[in-house]
Length: 308
Image (cartoon, rainbow, N blue to C red):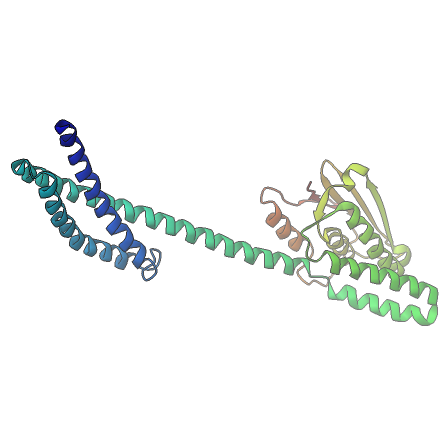
């Protein structure tokens, strides 16, 4: 029994002393964290911890001495030796614990700060993405309102048909404006109405063909991507009955392909949308993907990656 006490008492003495030391420093560190965050007040936080430790360590040593006298009252000569050893161990341990605590807390705070910064950057990208997506060329709006006004007195049936396509286009823009991706099938339904409006204005100067399989229709593309590509082709090329513009819309190998012949205008109107806009949106959705652009002598081709 006495032998067991000789083993248990030193162990109990060590555990109580170390727990008291660590818990005191830990509670103090948690208390001052609201006043001195690691990422904004590192020097003040470290100084406060070391200052507290210089006060707390003597207090723990004093309490350990009193406890040693109680636990080792049968062997007072051994008690002094144990206390001396305990004090040495406490000083070393407190330094190690303090440095570890500083390192751990600084790392955790920095990690939270990085995560928060990434979250804010992500939110900014989301807002930038939505602002890019919401851009529809105001020149297009102006041209089609002018076309509609011209059709009303000349041909009421054509005007009604044109107004219906106009409504379909802007209904789609409003409904899809908060979606990053839409199915290629939905995008094609929209682009047919969009192109019909242009064909009403341009007549036989614009021809569009479609070559897309059923499997590819289920793939997804950035919202309004086809509108950007078609608009880009019409904006930068001469479109009339003498020099018609031929646009081919196809899809294969998980790529949406828009190809047109080249009849370049001498000057074009630009609102900084089009390819640059679409390129940034794709990089936001998938950093490892990008537009594939091929500018030949007689044709211009853009390939857009599609998504599952």
